[in-house]
Image (cartoon, rainbow, N blue to C red; front, side, top):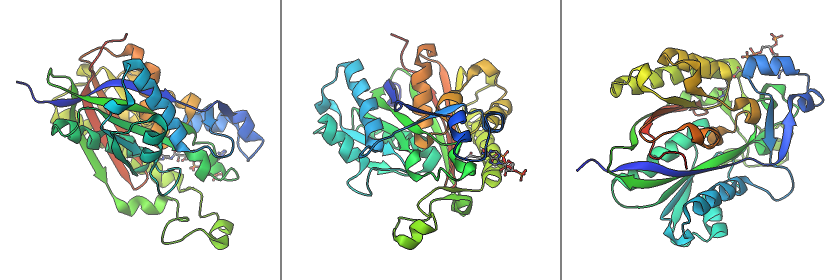
Length: 332
Ligand code: UT7
């Protein structure tokens, strides 16, 4: 009998309705469409606007799609892991909120923070519960409402990030498809270059932290860019070597959508031609934990059973990694 692997058997993705275009940003900060497109590849992003709306709403919409597509009872789900750095609250967890809203009464779950690598960390973790046999149906969500922690007076960050995300269903499979391998890495010394220092236990929110804008993302773009280009390319090459994959064996690369130039550098190191490198950064920007599930949703129609797919990401922490999987189903 083949090894039992965690296979992605259904996916869902969701973005909020409000569009924030480069033209809109030109009216808010000293920037321009040409700069944003040439430096990042982004044309517009989505914003979850309105009171009392949080990251759980993105997850709820994505998970609901999965339940509907597969005609599942909410009671069938065993575990929900949510990758996010913008939870609705410190607690209850976003996972608790999603399970409650959708009636997933048999599921337990938790949130996991690994910034832009959050979905890969969460997916690898969820896969362990399937491989060990502890769970039969695990949902992994990657979603972020980045607009809640972005300073729309800081042109270094506000042009990059957006809101959105998605979810996948993991089920056991012993036919050879599913998650084959992952390589995950972390280097906490990178935290100085990309962080949000306010609101946690070291600097609890108060007038001073708010006056100092410590509740917003701080990013030193060039330092992060340098590490991202090297590490995302290295880890993607490493997962190919470990699994004896040549560039022609890979059907698609789904890389974290932070910057088109970082994705191009990774693809070039992997020797991939452009049609294998999927992108939607121009429409959604960087949705942190949300980018890879959103990409999967946009391009699901291309994937065939048995396709070799590589996910790759780099983000705050620093955290980074790659996952190699064989796609588990043909388009409906
Ligand atoms: O997903 C999590 C991980 N994050 C990332 O992977 C992000 C990695 N970093 C990046 O993607 C890029 O560093 C940025 C897109 C953030 C910035 O691009 P860059 O090519 O590294 O620009 P830069 O920071 O070196 O700035 C170049 C110039 C500067 O002007 P001077 O000093 O040359 O006159 C900036 O002040 O561009 C200026 N600039 C802008 N100009 C117009 C910075 N932001 C903007 C802006 N619009 N929004």
